Image (cartoon, rainbow over all chains, first blue to last red; front, side, top):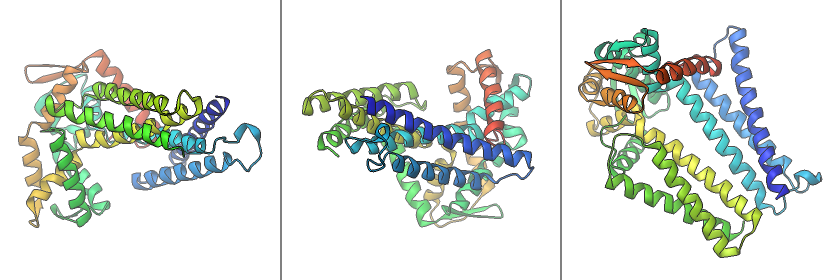
Length: 183
Length: 165
């Protein structure tokens, strides 16, 4: 079981390095007053994750020679990568929640209103004044950047083939899971 | 890769997904029910361990591998489920799918969204979770909700441009 502990530690260390690098780049861009667009930030995080994964894979190569990293049996290398990727997914999800979380933002709006607000005001001023129209516009611009839909000058549609595929799969799974009025 | 590891992970993940679909269809709810989902996932992980032990006896390293793969499969599903259960983007995509080739204005989508109860459902879920209190058409943060809001604001600034929604 020493190998299992070593693998867990190396996977965790690699994940910590990726997170530290990512947070460091965000901090540096803030200090240098050069804001990085969120799309570029996400892409750089994905690249960091890939580089981290490749580094971990190489580190655990049985041929390298260091006994404490030698993966025997070899399928433990895949275990290390899967553990590392689980951690990366969790970080990605937390990061997404902390930048785009709809419900979390409602709580922050309430906090900024002194802790209490009427429901109509919460809705109208959602996201620091964006409102429902603002959040839908923001989401549509994101979908357009991902080439899922056309969105120009307040006119939306039609869906691209990729957008249709996502929409069909998403709707179908919501139907199967009986998720009625969500989102 | 030993077949027993693959078979165990398939058995565990399959059990989790079957239980998930069965429970969600038998008892529909707009709440994401993450804790229940976590319990079902733990059941699936338990099944994968039992299957692996049944197939190969108690081998520590293989069990470790099974748990690692099970964890990554479950984490990936949670990631997808979070989008399915709460995503405004998926809602917009499904509305646009039903519009076919017709162009729709942002105002039309906004009116449709506002006339649905989606925003109010989120408020109600947060009331049920103890983050705010609903009364007379207004919402008030609880201490738990205020603490979460403060934390989200602070962490949002650390990881990027802050929590924008």
